[in-house]
Figure 1 (cartoon, rainbow, N blue to C red):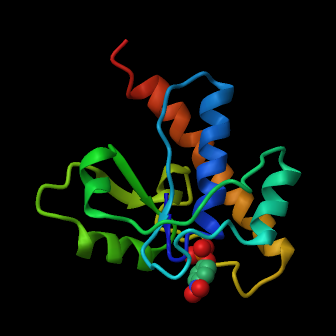
Figure 2: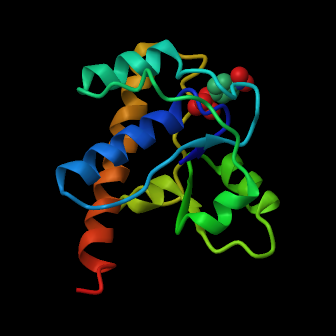
Figure 3: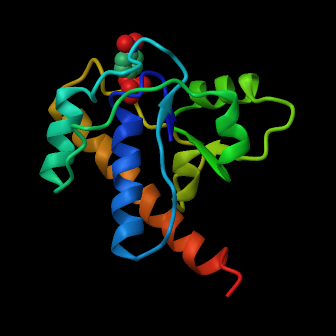
Length: 152
Ligand code: 4NP
């Protein structure tokens, strides 16, 4: 899960995907990162922590990191939270990238092409909107991964 700072949107997307995979006992390795490096080593924004907590998830131990070339070889999917993150990811992808790169909300029927708005300059309700969007995408992806993409 990749956004700009890795302190607002992508930690919530990571939390939502981890939670849904756990609920359905689907074994998926999930991480998040930022295209920018300003918040490397920082915990998620307090408003993101509060939103996750409201949905029963503790993300206080998450730490920001910047996306790196190895990620493109290690992960099967890299989801951009918005269109800028997507173009940045395509630009920095190494030639031997294996991961499929796409917009996170493309996972949700009817939301194709949509970005998750950056809530950084918003308020707590904007973080709740972020949660609603990333949670819908996480649920759709785990459903697709466990049903349609499974060899069994
Ligand atoms: P995020 O939000 O990309 O959802 O983590 C942001 C957080 C911090 C900054 C930008 C976006 N920043 O410029 O510091």
